[in-house]
Length: 562
Image 1 (spheres, rainbow, N blue to C red):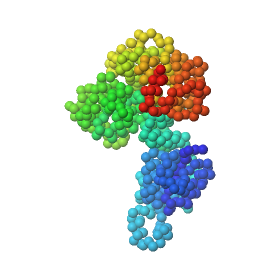
Image 2 (image 1 turned 90 degrees about the horizontal axis):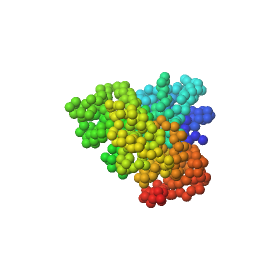
Image 3 (image 1 turned 135 degrees about the vertical axis):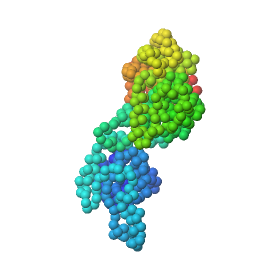
Image 4 (image 1 turned 60 degrees about the vertical axis):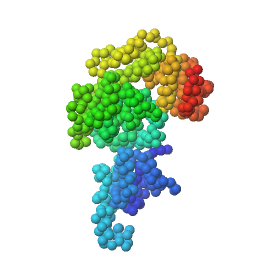
């Protein structure tokens, strides 16, 4: 049974209750799942929460136009939520206006003066106080005594079927994104596996020759790109540097980038709980392909913005300045004076901004593979250095061959060349003897990336060589082949148990492959599971109980490492 609705019916009871019931019944006859408050609000519950939930879980928002609905504050709230969630809104014109006779029936004691005052406020009409968003959309006409109901219904059904798959995916992803938001945006609520891939594909759909049925909401875009970020070791394509007075501009630019499936780091969203502010900024810049710098007098005066620019320059990052407020040439830092910048200060209309947005996207896509590899190798080199040149972190196999090829190209570049540390790291990796085996292969669901990253980090600190997909698969590699090779050369197959991993077909395939090679299995429990769902090979092994208890992490890890 569907968890979402095909449509939500919004109406004003005084004018359209009977029509709403008729419409509901006829749509139900067509096999559609319709939310209608006469049927879908149980007794004794918060009706506003139920209505909001119905709108969020409906693929389409049907708004019945009549004087009561147009002038109702409750219907107004419903429209605003539908707009905020970027729902496909379909207006149905039912009652253009009510006359004196109908008004008098509803108000038998009403006087001429009251009727005139009622009309003066536009309360008798469906047009005077209409919400601007409703006025911009083509309506389906259901006027009683004028339009043929069945013909109008046929037109409505055709509209509901148009791009139905895209609109349904909009609702499914919105439902998941709202749950992620309500769970304080924890990583374990993000998309993984095929769901993530499908969401990425959906976000990239464009309607070239016609108007889209609806647009992704900002929450959709953030949710999908955060899922991408989580699958890429928290690395991003863009770090946005800005001063607090320019926060609104920053948010607009971030929304534009996420809409194009680009991952973004900002200090308002990406500083992890308990992480030192300056350390977080350092990490964010290191793990980003580009630094987008919002240029304004406040940014130039900001200690943090200056520091962010210095870090980016020291790491040979690509810097893209965007002028967001008038700034005198004398104030602009020397490092930015020779760079071409995008100027938002001359924007008058939204189309002006869209041209600048297009320019930014064009720059970001230029040589993007080069800058991604620059970031990945820099991050690994810095990790190697910070762990006192721990040999377990050095590059091997495909990763090393890929890095060597990148370095040959990078050393010929005049802009954003490799850093000396990257060169040293690759050279040291080339000097090491080929490893015949690795200590640990880490198998997990991306929903459990936080624990997987932490275990990988601690194992490397203990001098263990690890295979961890977020570090061990270079871009462009054959994913399945690299996983098989990783399992082949590992001494231990470490599996992180959780509800998502024990039901994941990807994880099951890895277990099957490891079992076929008679690998030693080690299991750690991250979240409670149903033992009956365990793969037989995993069921044979006593797990170490991590189970999200940070206080016991060190003790549990010592048991694992020992």
